[in-house]
Amino acid sequence: MNRLALIDMPFSTVNMPSSGLSVLKPYLNRNGFDTKCFHYQVEFANIIGKTYLSLGYTHPIDIFIPRWCFSRMAFPDSDVDRLNYEMYQHMARFNFSILEMCKIRQQAEEFTRKISHREWDKFDIVGFTVNSINTHAALAAGRLIKQNYPETLIVYGGNSLRDTEGKEYCKHLPWVDYVVIGQGERAMVELLQKLNSNKNVARDNYSLSKNNTQVAVIEEKKTISLPIITKTDTIPGIICRNENGDIEYTPQSKLSFYDVLPDFSEYLNSFENSRPDIKEYISKNMYVPVSMSHGCFYGNKKSCQFCSDPSLSLSQYAKASLKQAVAIMKSASECHPNPKTLELTSSILPNEYVPELFDEWSKIDNNSKLSIMHVPWFTKDHFSSLHKSGVKEIYLGIEQVQPDLVKLMKKSHTVAQSLNCLKWGKHYGIYIAWMLLIRVPKEREEWYYEVAATMRKIKHFFPPRHIQNIEIMPDTPYWNSYVFDELRPCHKYSYIYPSYLDLNNIAWKFDYNDDYYKFTKANSLCHDAPPHHKLAFDAFEEWTNGTDYKLEFIEHNEVFDNRNGEKTWSLTDAEMDILFLTEEPVHKNRIKDKECEINSLLDKDLLFFDGSHYISLVCD
Figure 1 (cartoon, helix red, strand yellow):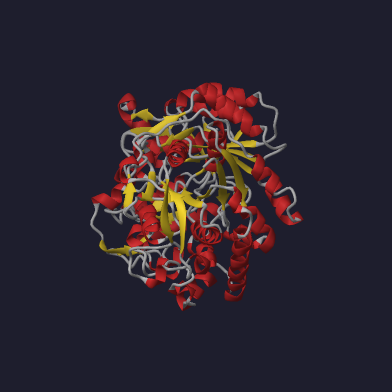
Figure 2 (cartoon, rainbow, N blue to C red; figure 1 turned 60 degrees about the vertical axis):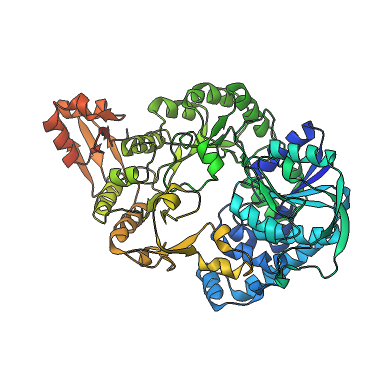
């Protein structure tokens, strides 16, 4: 059990390699296990062309359509083959014709058959990394590889897999030997060591105790000899069937950050011989993922109410040392002559790392931009360091601009801190990627008048990328804290999964009723929103369709403002002092004796107050 193949299937992104596989492969190699990666999303993109880019993971428009393409191959004896009128309508909503999608489905099935006949007998284990839209492709390929090479063990893992989903697959899908939940490095090494030490046990491949003929995907049953995990030696993070056919699982108890540099070599080689349009797209839009932490720094204390990351990651946080972080960034930047972006993915950096880490980055001779993910705790000095280092883009956890909604979501920051990041990002030319979440459980309609008003006050900052409903997902505090009327898996799951699988254990998206409308309605678009949410959509449309908004100092004691009509504000010295004092958030008690000037600046929308802190909105 020393030879492993790790596979990334369509419709994973073609212009960014898997962050997990890039670290798992060198870690396994270092521990004596010969590992090779296969990036089949690139190969399939070469078959269907640029249509892949509309379905792929870089900008996934929908999780159901890409899965539907592989669902019939994953579950050939189920009812997922039926052509459903509502699924037709769902495809049409995203401008896909039925004929086009049926052709892509046929190409997906031919592709899966083709790769399943490759020389997998050279490997002891074939592992698949699973994300939100490649699940069915991975299940389909695993089923066929197991059919063609029954002695090869099939393993699934990935950040989007929940333990209930893994148990459901391991229980009902006979080709699934093991599922990894959480970090794969230590779990896979322990699994391989255990398999190498266990004696082989004869068992009927594809035999199940469940009396459901839909599960039997292979007519001929073969008795083969495979190593098996016994009930007494389960491995943390591994779901498997024991010697009695029962499901065994022990959760991982600790997150770790492993001292290993990412390896992207096989991904880079995978597109060198691509068709010209795909190769050009990848070359010009390559994102190289750089992970410097695991879990969530804030979730280690108290997670956001809506966060749907796996529960292990929410409750823990592990980070690289500063020395490791510098080495990882340098290694990633050198993996390709000119990647467009190094993306610090799934990483929330400690604030104290920022000056030194990005000073080191500025010394690296490359033309790629750096994109990082963080919570909105950065200050002006942090943004100055990022600017000097050439950082061009930051993904910040800003999801609302109304204080009561932010508190209701239990975010780790205040609205004033969020606006501070938006302001200094704009000042230093660092794009801030954020979104506006609506439909917060227990929200009040009147709060959205304030949401819309604030959006119009900050039109000179970077707008949110989009407005999105909060979705109630498993493993979130909302899931455990509220009782929702008729909570049920989103009905579209029934179009891509067979009836013998319990969708309550698999689904990420759920339908439910509330006081305003049925969630099953496609209400993420402006015209479907209830009146109070429409206020936010209207302000967003005005913001994104407008001119180059400015709010800036021009002359002594004068501020130019064209957010809502062009005007110039003439301010007193005392008002200017307040604006300079509040260039970053200031607690209300520090300036409580300046009530007259504060009220004047608030009336002009030059100053913002979130209930505890004031911040100047002027972006010089």
